[in-house]
Image (cartoon, rainbow, N blue to C red; front, side, top):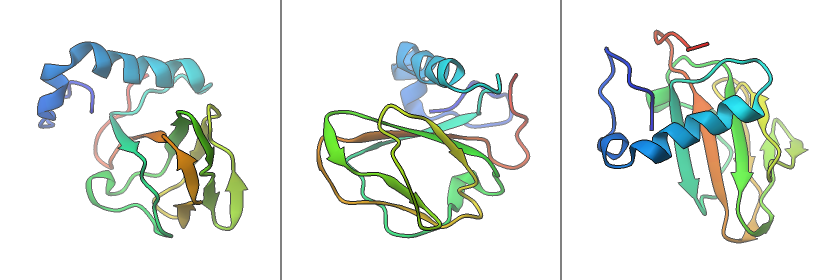
Length: 124
């Protein structure tokens, strides 16, 4: 999902689920103290990522915000070897430059990752 940006092609799901799109970005506004809203959000279901740095659609981003949701055990985010419990606890980190991955988990785990690719102005 991403905001309605004039120079960006929006995912089809934004039009199919406008209330969900609004709720995803309202959630970020409610849990992040810096009063800045990202332009994009990746929603992952039961994804366990191996060690990586971000690439692809988020090209050039610096700061990401992630939060874990759901009924699961373990599944912490590891950032450069530091274990971070993100279950209902948002974390801001530089996913483009810092290697990170998901620890094994059991249960149903969602993660929401907000970011703004380089060249797209972040909304305040």
